[in-house]
Length: 295
Ligand code: ADP
Ligand code: MG
Image (cartoon, rainbow, N blue to C red):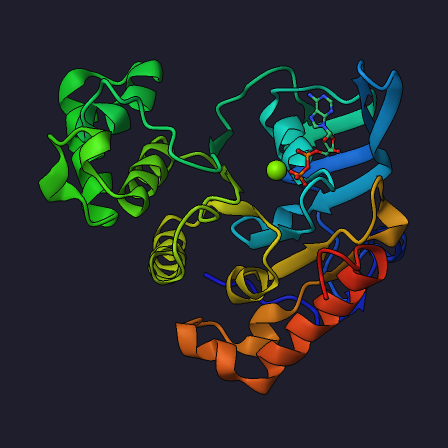
């Protein structure tokens, strides 16, 4: 389900100021909201403060639940920090992060993360890996087995249920991680460069699989990548972070990718000139701030 949105490119700040002029106002709280968020780390070796977010505002409105949102920026710009704030693993130093209108207090059931690379438990079988999160939710043994097998089938690994992770390729292990995350049916799925460690062919297969799964499951996905092509291929909405620290008036975004590129995104869509134009637009934005990362 790619949700139709207005065709316009603007900063998050402008969008918030304009209040989304072509949309009906809704009283429902935003799926995710960053309100004037400041986040910094302290580098104890250099004895200095590292600002990651400064007065950052960002929202996925209630109407946009079920959207595929991509956060695009180079390594070190703060993407993982944003996901960690949403998942409740870390807290903001200033401002608030809210899920469905509620401030986040520690890890919540509303969101689940697919991490960067293979994080299956090596001592558990594929099936037990997927059952793990369901057990934490208190689901009984028979039901967890059923749900886990259903999700293994969705990622094409039903016949490997009794294998151990080390017997699987990197791509297959990442499929297990995706099955494990989706099986718990989180409203929001956070994906932190989940295909970054895979070869090009496997990555392309995984991207297509993810699109299919998302269309069935209808979760809101927040997908982090530094890869422009991946961002354009997957996103309904792409948020570009062309600065570090991230300040919201410097964020550039497009919310109309499904209108420009169409609903279906087979690999061939990358040959469309609209695709190339979007990629070029993002590359130029990123290059302004990060000439070494984006040529
Ligand atoms: P990204 O995911 O975009 O690569 P991160 O959110 O991981 O970026 O990091 C943003 C910045 O904050 C980087 O400069 C990183 O070195 C720094 N950073 C991240 N985590 C910590 C930490 N725990 N302590 C100190 N600095 C950190
Ligand atoms: Mg990261």
